[in-house]
Amino acid sequence: MRKIFCLIIAAGFFIEASAQQVITRDQLYKRESPYERYTTYRISVTGGLGLPMGSFGDYMEKSTLRNYSILMDFVFPKNNLSVGVSLGSQYFKNRLPRQVYNFDSQDVSAVQTRTLSAIPLVVTGSYHIGKVNAPIRPYVQVGVGGAFAELANYYGTIPTGDNGFRFVAQAGAGIRALFNKNGKFGLEAGATYQHLPFEVASEGIKDASSFNVRAGLFYRWW
Image 1: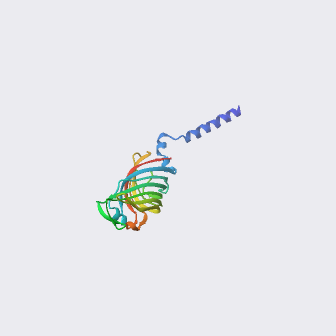
Image 2: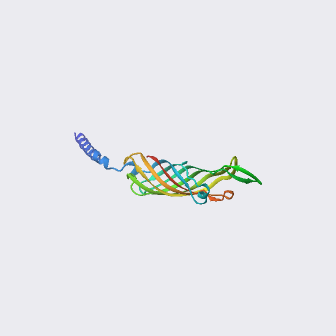
Image 3: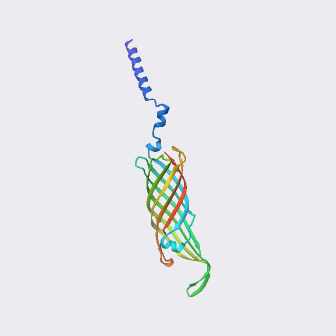
């Protein structure tokens, strides 16, 4: 009889302790979301305007809308930092009116078409202002990496230029806006200056740097 009584008392204590651990509906919604507690993942796809800068701006003159980027990064909510890898694609083109050019002591009438394509692969680091679930979250970003660049200048069908892998550095800022506080999708917009040393003496340029303004969407998960 004493054993049964002890078991009843122990069961009562267990039920009471379990009841104290139950999280009510109100308490559940007061807990931090997984995005605020854990390292999470984010992928951003953006596109927009590319403006040639420096000696490249004098050479190319025209901007481009063929300017895209995809960024995958790890978001650390406690210190407002994220680290990621960005892959981009840029293509500039400028066609000049027909003129007469001299090649090997011969005059050739041709339309000059200047093009530059670049595929930068960059490791990025970002610092964000505000909490990870803030409706609008500004950020600043820097990045370093490499790019394959190809400059081709066609005089009619006669090509000149150069190509190869080059160092690339980026610095920029932007904002990210969530569609819902704890949602997975949001809007991203930002501007980045990209320094790409790419000297082509025959074309009179020392770099292929650009100022890029992009907008797009991001998706996050944990």
